[in-house]
Length: 374
Image (cartoon, rainbow, N blue to C red):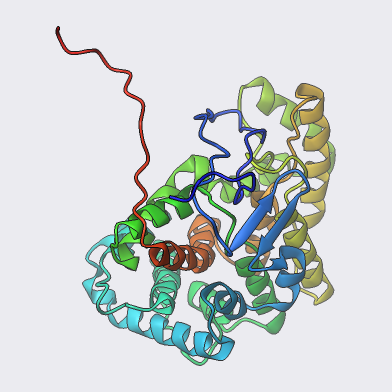
């Protein structure tokens, strides 16, 4: 492993911690040098492959961000992703009961584990497969037949088409691309580190992606964009926000979509996704929860500041993820698997970067057990 340096690749020892999570004392330890992304928690800045996320999300497609992260050509990536989706579709009969799982991340982890690395050797093969498996699970969950991929479409368009069963309009496709680009990579988070650990053993990419999916499945990392909608539904009207939020805090429960381990200001991805919602509105797409979401966010900031004046508990990426993905037509049970579809781009890039170092990640531990008899 490279030695520690003053520059962290996205971890901050002074970052706020969610109320139901405990710090391990390991946050902020530099474990890799990376060109892929950097998280500045103090200033609220996310850089992906040399580009601020705010500008990248307004002009790049998912293929474009994959090309940046993987060091490849946009057109070649688009073709490879299409082939990857088609190849995954052809293997669906060999997935056993993976897509029958009630939990989307469990289904995605099990389905991906069925892939043979020799048949899915390319990053785009695996990224395509994750999209196919996520959308097929969502369709089966609703009692509908999975939809075959269309290699001619872009990844965002085909993902939405496979999930909702109809070809989307350009505004919705742009909204999906904005989301996928925004969450494609985010420093050395838990799932990315899990992927790099497996890659450091010289194992295959499929195994590393399965490890990452297992880490993302955990609620302390995978988050809760779906419950943000549950919160908005429960509040119902802007004027009821403060009282409802106070009630949740009095009951010892967290406010969904607020607070982040790294950011001490508002998560920049929340702003990007809020602007993506604005573009949908301007294109005539219905976004019924936007006004309520903004009112609830404002109320939550005030309530949390009164309770925790020294802790910067502001909107994180999950808050507007929920509102955006709902407006795009994705079912809320699919929200975290869709996050995994996007993050596969970053995971694959980190796997390749770690593999190129040729170094095994072998952390040390501190023994706290009993001493043997004298």
